[in-house]
Image (cartoon, rainbow, N blue to C red; front, side):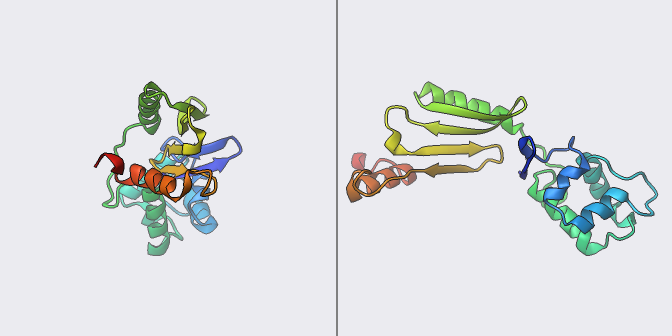
Length: 179
């Protein structure tokens, strides 16, 4: 799912967005040609959903100036934004904010500290930390489904080479001390 940072912070490119949201994923020429819909037998698209509909109906080629290359660029942008699938179907997805809410609740019940980042009412990212042991680092789960873990320190503060090895193997393959 593609996000962009606008004046109001991180934002997901969603069907209800203005066509202007596509400026973060399309070239200026493609966006301007699409938004103006030169010589098209329909009104110019005003929302991302309008663009998705035109793509799915195979009508983008009716816009003067949108050839195969630019249509492929639009298709790629719609796929990367999670609006359509690679085979050209509407992407039916669970609301990511609701999924993040469920993940956050589950992690809170394990005693972890959760910091929530919102765009309006929508939860767009959570930052997870262990309040009992900050040396374990932080994990982030984003609206786009990406998960990262980050820890900083030197070898000595991380428990030496064995501590680093145990932390990484514990995260990636499970607790090796119980094997």
